[in-house]
Length: 158
Image 1 (cartoon, one colour):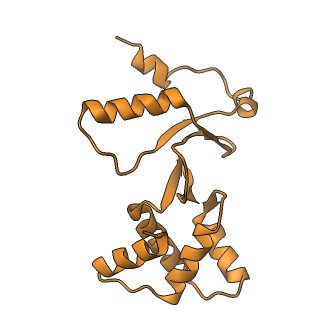
Image 2 (cartoon, rainbow, N blue to C red; image 1 turned 120 degrees about the vertical axis):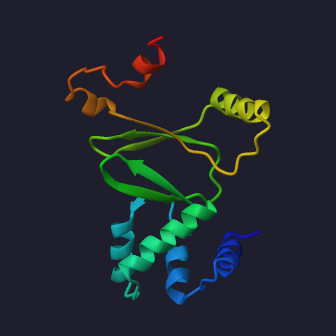
C-alpha cells in the first residue's frame, strides 16, 4: 500500500481528518532525503507560503512516526531530527552529540544478528532503530577521554 493511503487510513482510524495542511506536511517530508528539525520544516513550509501551524507540524510528525513513515533521531539534549522512512534499507546511525553530524551505516553481519534475535524470540519486528550516540572524529579530539558511562565499559564490567 502506498504511504499516502496508509496515512489517510491511519488518520481515519484515529478519527482525524486528512487536511490540506497535513497533506502538505506529508508531501514535504516524503519528498525529502535529508534529516531535518521540526522547526526547519515549519520554516520551509512558511517560505513556500503554506499556512501551517507549528502545532500541526509537530502533531503530524508524531503521527507519521507512530505509523513508521518517519524516523525520529534523538539528539540528546538538542531538538530531535526527523527523516522520511521511505524505501530505506536497514541502517544504523552514528550521531555526534557535540556537532550533530549523522552518519548512516549498514552491515550485513549486524543485519544477520538482528534477524537471528527476532527469530530466536519468535518476534516479528514492526520497526527498529539502531543508533549510537557519541563523538565524531573531529569532536572527539576536543573532548577529554573520560570512559565513565561508556557503553562498552558497562557491558564488560562483570
